[in-house]
Length: 296
Ligand SMILES: C[S@@+](CC[C@H](N)C(=O)[O-])C[C@H]1O[C@@H](n2cnc3c(N)ncnc32)[C@H](O)[C@@H]1O
Image (cartoon, rainbow, N blue to C red; front, side, top):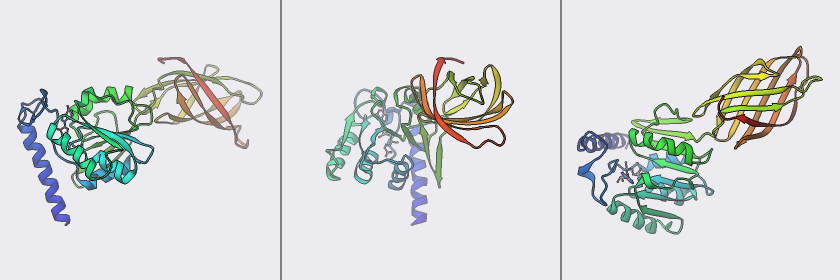
């Protein structure tokens, strides 16, 4: 069985190569264009059932999810998400034969009331309802979609791609099995800018500020307390969940503040765990910060 699985993956690779070589050197594949007046951007190579399952588990798909599959082929990802994970959603597919097949498959699998399939160009598809976006496309197509994924999907939306990455947007998780890769990204909130808040330290109530720089989910930036520089460590952004730690000497007290909160527009609300002074016991308090400038 294992050897047969490997053979199948070799065949899958070969189908990709043949399909790509049949193209013109660009991503347009005239030999594969079968419907509507627009050539396909990606050939049809179905995701194996095992990889579909892995993609959906990696994204943690459940009954509250609305999944969109871009280039949905015979519908297997959307149908499995509905049938086995309780999700709803839709797929878009340009090719009319495969689109019709996905409609028939949804009926056959008893999920036609929970999923939809549209014969539509994936580049003209509204993505905003997705809580999970799945793709088995090509690197250049992923890259073309990337700005829309980052701006149109809500922070926290999970994006899963079979085999192809998103260049310098590093995945939050990746799982390889044999020749197959599955990537997961969590759409990050836009947190770039200067954030400020007040926080009692000893007898004072100094002003804290952090100038966050952001490259996708990676954040960094200088922290100041009343204009004195402090250390920022453990800065982390996952969807709209932001956390970081500030360390330094404030008014003769060695402090360590661990912040965590949720970003919503220009505010962050959460809590802080504080140690103010070497021998002081930790204490916790609510925390909120506001964005006072968009760019650091
Ligand atoms: C690699 S297959 C993946 C099929 C399915 N998502 C799966 O994983 O089994 C890519 C699919 O995208 C479709 N496709 C290519 N260009 C498209 C476009 N611009 N809009 C919608 N579908 C497209 C192809 O017809 C093909 O069925």
